[in-house]
Length: 359
Ligand SMILES: [Fe+2]
Image 1 (tube, rainbow, N blue to C red):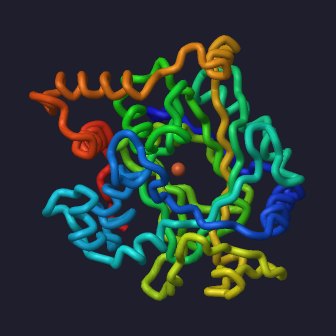
Image 2: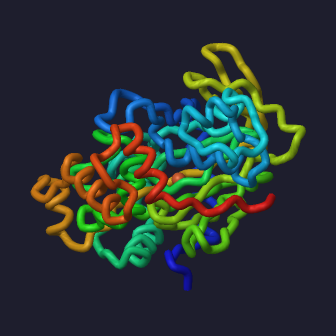
C-alpha cells in the first residue's frame, strides 16, 4: 500500500461510452490556451506567477527530466532561483509554449456544459473511489475539464491547487494555497478533493508521472492508453506529464495565449491564431485527457459549513499562522520580511518537490 492510495480503472467505460468521449471532444470543437500567468494584484507576493512554486522548480530542475527548460539566468533570478542549480537553458518563450496547453470545461458543479458528459460526470466508479481514498462518504462533483497537448508540450511537476473554506483560488494566489496544503497547518479548513483523470486514445510519450509515496518515493508512470483512468489525491501527490512525442525532432510552434486548438474534421486538428492555422496534427499525435474533480466531505454538516461560510479561514489568520510557524522553524528571527520575500520563503520552506529523475 502506498502513502497516498490511488485507484486505476482499466477499462473505465464500455467501448461505446469510450467512443462517446472521443466524439464529445470533437463536438466541443475549439479549445483555448490555458496560461498560468498572474491576474490581478494579490495581497501577498507581488509579481509572482500563480504557480510560482512549480515554475521555480521547473527552472531549477530543467523540466521533467532535467533536460532543458532551464530558462535564462535573468529569468531564474527574477523568479528567485538560487545560483548554481541551473541546467541547460531554453528561451523563455519556448518554456511557456511547452507548458501552456489547451483546456476547456465540460461540466461545472453537477451542471453539464456539453451534452453527453453525464456518464463521466456521474461515474459510479469515480464516486466510490473518491470515498475510498479519502475515507469520506459525501461526494460532490466540482468540475470536469479537458486538457489537450500537442507534440513537444509537457506539464511541469506540481500538486494541484487545493481549496480551504474561506481561502480559495478565486480570492488568493495559487502558490499560497499549495503551500498551505504542504504545511499541514490548515487541514481543519481543507476540503479534500479527489481527481480522476481519463484517457481515450493511445499516445506516444505524455506519460502521467506521479509520486504516491510522497516526494521522497519513486515515481509511478502511467502510459496514456485508451479507456483507462486514475483517481488520485492530486492536491497531495506530486504529478506531471512527460513530454508528448519526446525526441529532438519535435517542432513546437510558437504557441501564445489566445491561440486555440480546433477540430477540422476527419480526425485532424489545427492550432489557430485567429483564423490562421499555425500548425496541424492528426488526432493520434495529440494528448487528450479529461479530469474529474469532486469535493469529499466527512458529513452533511461539513458540506453545509462550506456552503454557508460558518467556519471560514481568513487570509490574515493564514499569514499569521505561517509567520508564527516560520519563527518556530527559525526562518524568521526579527520582523517578518516584505511581502515578496515572505512569499518566496513560504514556497521554499513548505513545498518540497521530488528530485529530478533521469529520462
Ligand atoms: Fe495537476
